[in-house]
Length: 233
Image (cartoon, rainbow, N blue to C red):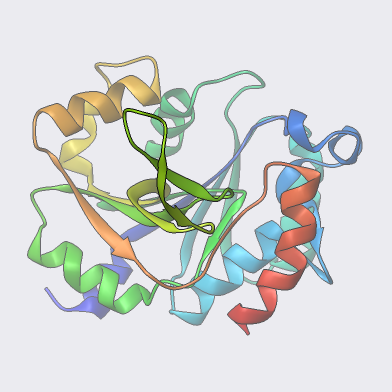
């Protein structure tokens, strides 16, 4: 299968149901995906990223302040095939995906509504097509926020690294999988339990992303994102 045919069979599901409690007071008025980084909301940035790669089919899985996301999509992206689905106020990701899957095509790409990456999507899809029996997950290398000490048993410090990049990779989402893998999802009520299961059964493969990454959980991260977003342009 070539990339174009794959994209025609792909549904992007953007998870936008959370309450964004760590971004209070900003999220008292707006759902987190509609918080702006400079002049564009997080959600707008995510959608435009996919549109640039000629993705045409979207589902926005909503929850908290869903009506505001509905209004935003109808106003900003009325010419595009973007469907908003209310998936519950306090639902786990598993429930949101189960409900969204009823309207999806053969392949899924699931991403978080607060996370932006500049992955070359065509390369990512090629990587998936070579690993089509797996569930793909994008990962990013962790950078320490602190200076790291190398301490001996006698407490002597023999090394120091200022905020090093660690040999630890964390989940940034952008999961890709086929609809025939969805029966795994139906076995679990919690998304974290599903991920643990998939990893133990060797059913997941990581794509290591070395480019730019933004996740907005706190006001501090939002301020950092305003500088980081410049690298995406």
